[in-house]
Image (cartoon, rainbow, N blue to C red; front, side, top):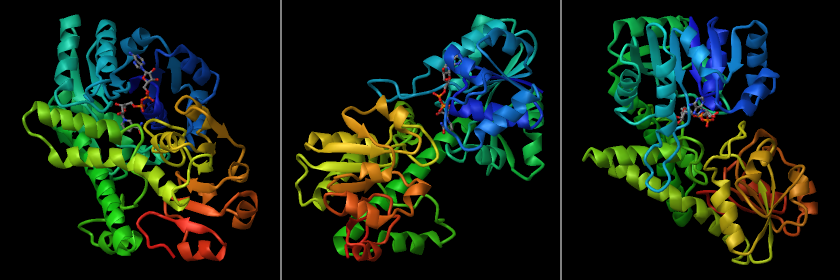
Length: 436
Ligand SMILES: NC(=O)c1ccc[n+]([C@@H]2O[C@H](COP(=O)([O-])OP(=O)(O)OC[C@H]3O[C@@H](n4cnc5c(N)ncnc54)[C@H](O)[C@@H]3O)[C@@H](O)[C@H]2O)c1
């Protein structure tokens, strides 16, 4: 199968490389010429475990190529995937579909035979209809089927998620398109990943409903954590106690600084707008977004409390900047509002992240970036774990204590135990757990 992937970001690059690994011929297209030049030279522009090997292997076998020439890639393709960004629109929180519609227009102009145009980007209900309308308007003679195929991969585990999905959702009522999609994903459902066919609008809504549900789970346990702190209960035991119930499940029940990242914040916002526009307001999701928004800055008050309310002039060391481990993605990372709030309180901020510091520079001002966790802790009044990178799970606390001005640890991911930390001589605060 010949595939053109329009948009070579976190989703387009991973999906393109995985499709090539299934044996398809894939051209990954991007309008960012710098990105395409780097990829062509074998340099991966994002951090995603295993992606460099996967890209190198498939590029070496000429199944995966990179280009800025959308026209040539589309003209030869049997399926064209749109995987461009759909960020929050400035001002109103609706999904910004400018890139999707622009891609649709460019694709339309390049079509040369029956082609399946697949929206992989996360898009509001009805976007497939509009993509189809744009294509027909631009090229009334075009032979196309427009399909929705939302992507559920998680950054940091993207290749595994793509190759072992819980399900593949294909929204289309066109028989030929379904055949093409079945052929593309055949290697996966031979491994028993269920392929689920729905109407296009249903597929579009499945993606938003999934993300909103997961965001709700996180926000629920975060509020339970706040209550646990007040009443002297332990949220981790509560999460285990409810998560062992199969009807609830243990995933997405880790209390922390609030959800961030490139998807949950913008997708909950977009779903809220879709609900309002359709006179079916989603009150639960509206509350989730509002609660989560307030939580991130509230984490700065937790740091302040750990320092007895004295933050002005203090030095705070931040471990972990990216929105989760194993990615360099800083989009909507909880570290950003936390650090800005600490700076607003008059703190000096030092930070270390294993891979995210280059990206962080574009989001944060007046931060001293450090070479490792120990350099970061130098003369700090408090150490705050914001992202649970593997290398922060076994820190040398004697070394940290010797480096710091005061042994104060704020663990926003609950990776350490309060009693252990007391033994190391640290004043410890976690999330939703009694202080010891
Ligand atoms: N990042 C994730 O974990 C994830 C997971 C599931 C779904 N999604 C969804 O997938 C979509 C893409 O997300 P992403 O994180 O990969 O975005 P991204 O910003 O990393 O990448 C988008 C790419 O598209 C390119 N682009 C934009 N317009 C183009 C055009 N007309 N022609 C060619 N290239 C163009 C941009 O230059 C950019 O490189 C979004 O809708 C997102 O919500 C993302």
